[in-house]
Length: 220
Image (tube, rainbow, N blue to C red):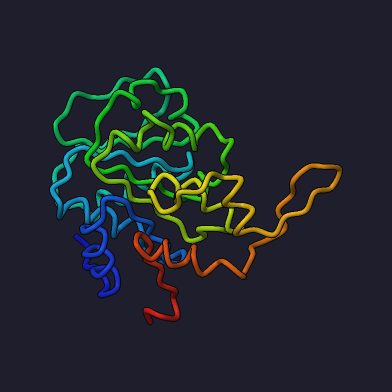
């Protein structure tokens, strides 16, 4: 196994304490390595990685480099592909393909890793419902660890899906946007232009319960 940097070891220790986590380190700081080693150290047998399609081979390689446990690593290539009946399995699937792969909804996982979790920022997106809606994938996992270097690229409203699923806000989407976003209504249609800085500290305080974020200039 490749030796982790000290800040990555801290991330592993932190992830191990979390049922719900948002690892938001800046891009290039090894979020996947931290998630893999943390899953090893809690003896997770069944792992699901949801990620963009292009990232699937990279995740398989990352498990080869960083996991010390012998695992059956499977990349989902088509919706018709069946899930292997193995006790210790790492299943890697794209978000779009997961929408077409019904067996995922019936499976239980020790850890679900949501790579590039900003893909789940849209309230209306099918992938957001697949993961977080009642009966969705996240509800069948012992732990859910979201990874992203850009937790809210445009405005605070993009955090609502994750914060609601993690139990960090009691507000529905409309009320959340009204409090934490700048909105305007051209032709009667709501548009979000940015974050309402007056109340954003409330969001930051709630996120501290589940989020760890380090920048490259902080870790040397």
